[in-house]
Every structure is written in C-alpha cells, then in structure tokens.
Length: 467
Image 1 (cartoon, one colour):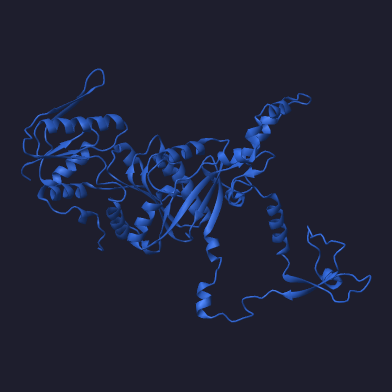
Image 2 (spheres, rainbow, N blue to C red; image 1 turned 30 degrees about the vertical axis):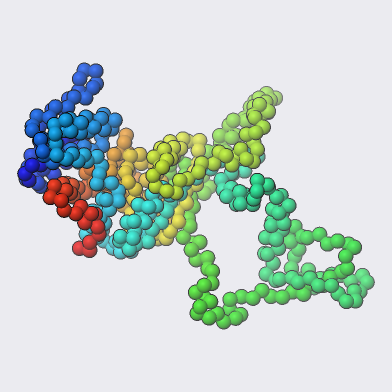
C-alpha cells in the first residue's frame, strides 16, 4: 500500500512482521532504546509527512514502559506531520472484537460444539460469555466463589442474603424468625390441619387422640392455651398434582423446581476442589488460635481482648465481599484478591456452578489468562461436580504470569488452553505445552489496517458469519 507507514513497538515485533507480510510491506524504520537512567528514546528514521501512520504495540511484562513508549511514538509522529496516526494497543482485538475469530475456530475445530456450554468463571465475565453463547446459539452457565467465614460460636457465616431481606428498615425481627421456623416445621406434616370450635365439648375428652396416635408430635409443638375451648382437628389430605387435571396453559405456567438440579456447590481449599468430609482450615485456624496449656488462661484472655464490635451481627455483614456483576469496574482488583485468597491455606471458599454441563463440552471464557487459580477451580468444578467431558479454557490474551501455564498443563481437568497471539509468549513455553492453542490475529489486524486506509467499513470484520 502506498502512503502508509507501519511502525512496530518493542513489545511484539513478531506479530508486526506477520501483519506487514500480509500487506506486502515492511515495518518502517524506527530506533527504540533506553538511556542509562531508564528513560525511553524514540527516533523516527523515515519521512512520514502526509502519510497514514499505524503504530502496533501490544502488552508486555513491563506494561508501563510499553504504554509510555507508545505515547512517545505517537508524539514523535505527530511532530513529523503525519496525516493520521492510529495506535494499536490491544484494539481492535479486545474480547468482544476477537469473538468472531474465536467462534469461527470453535465451529471448525471442536467436535460436537453445538451441544457445548459456555461458562463464565466469575460474575464479572457474564457479558463476554452471553455474547459468545448468543453467537453460537449455546447455553451458558456462571460460576461464583464466596469466602467462608466463621462467626463467633463456631458456626459457618457464609450466606446472609436472607437475613438482610428480613431485616427490612434496619430492624431484625426475632419473633418473625421464630414463627417462620415453627411454620416450616409444621409444614412437614403431610396432612393439613384445620382448627374449628366444637359445639358441645365433652368433659374429660382427649383432643385429637386419633390423629395423635397416627402422627407423632412435632419437635416444637405449638402451645395450646388452657383457657380456650377445646378444639377438634379434622385431617384433610393435601391435594397432589395427580388429584386434578391440569390444562396445557396451566401446566406451562406452573412452577417446577427442575432448574434447582442445575445448581451445584463445592468446597475449595487452596484453590482446589475437595470432598465434603475434608477438614476445614477455618476450624483448624480457630482451634489453634485459642489452644493454650492447662491452667494458662491465655486463650480466654485473648478472647477478652477482642473488640466487642467485631463479634456483632452487623460487623460480620460488613466483612462480606460484594461481587460486581458488571464487566469493567473493579473486575481486575476482585480477580487479584480472589487469586490471593486461593493461595491462603487458612481460607476456605465455596464455589457454585449454575448450569447443566453433564456429559457436555465446556468453554470457560474470559478476556485474559494471567494467574491460573480461578481457571483451575472452575475446571475442577465443571468436571468433578458437573460431569463435563471436555474443558476448553479460552481467552483473548494469554499473559500466563509466573508459572500459570505450567500449572494449567498439570491440571487433569483442563484439556485445551486457547488464546490469541496478541501477547508475546516465549517459544520455549510454546514448545513445552501440549494443551496450548494459539490463534493468529495478524490477518484480522492487517485487514483492519487496509480497510482503514481505503476508507472501508471495519465493523464488518467483527460480525459473525456462518462458514
């Protein structure tokens, strides 16, 4: 192409070479170096006057230096009187824009993909997952993780949503809870009991003697006032769905609890799924914190020194971490905190899978793979608890911080790791990996550059087309 200059940053020169090869050109000459004090130096060594300039820079382990280098290159090209300057930094290859490329690969390379399920490993990725599921016309599921906390007295403090609903206007009705508990226990009786006054009560009569002989009393029976007249209770069998015919319209609107079978929970200790009888690290930590020698009294003194406010009900409520259900804000921070929690041997998490994945292929989707704790936990949950047969971990950017790629390789529940080449991965890690699949985006970016230069529509590149 004429009157086009493509510059490469220092982060991913291999991707830039592939893009230029598809466009039939060479990267423009540019000298990038650092001074002895760490400052970045950029020197444009070709004329860019009245040229369309494209600068390609991806992420890197030194992302701050990479961004500053890109900004300095843009400033240098602006000073060189370029006609237009377009800087690529992860765009247009973000998650939603790379979705057509990923969807096309799934259609062409995954056997039985039409019966697969797309799963989000956290609520923050629901937008990405639903978008891919809609494009492929597949079902989707969501995985959530909650940190288990132990309240004073040793009881597990995890789900308090129901308590907040009952609090109403900042009040906590204890009597309401007691009545609800009694009504719930009374509902166990398969017979509905209707109380009505007798017209002529007999002296020394035994109330409901026939019913009491057939049905044992409840563990918490209701108290009957001795001053009220005696009552007889006539048992009436509960109506069952088979007693009365149900029309087609009524059956369609009738509530069923079949979806409840698609909610699966499990326990996570150090980021891995454990059995229900596995010892809880929370109890071990609590018992170790108050364990003292006989007659020492140090444990009691330790409890006495605790702030009384920390053991209150609202103090526990305020410590529960809220989940952001929208992609974007605070998502990175929450993910980082979650990964750190998985590494803590004294913490236990509860993981919940919503969706039916039994005997199906599962696509666990997110925008990037940096640390592997949440990926491994999600894969173990869908396989060991959900019964999935094949698991694909799919992301647009494969950062693979620390030894995350090696840990995902060792996980028996992960079958394939699919990423694009928007982020540089060393050749040694690529060769040593058996599960890693890298999708090439050079064709997508080169076509985007060509269309931008000739004023053609770019949005068509990111639409879904059936092959």
